[in-house]
Length: 109
Image 1: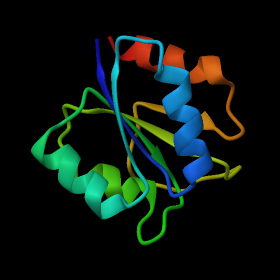
Image 2 (image 1 turned 45 degrees about the vertical axis):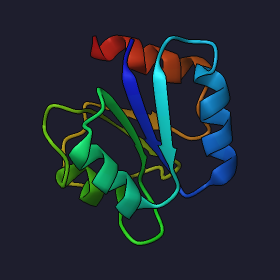
Image 3 (image 1 turned 60 degrees about the vertical axis):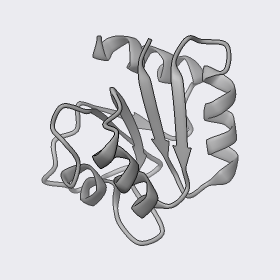
């Protein structure tokens, strides 16, 4: 069982993410506000973080760089080309296949 955080400003994608992991043993916590997500992940580091690239106030790489290195970080983006100095553990492109999410969590183990 993994603790997973998904941070995205798109509420429909948050709901979809929750549905994908609903029948699993994983604990899922979601945020639409990046500052609340950063606070949570800093105080209670999850095993896996999925973070959208374009958020309301920050970019996904800015969020990831503020969090502990022990978190397996996956960038989720609809951008064809992302320029970032932050090295994510994995990247998933929107529109994503639902199985990609499950496989990404399995690959962190």
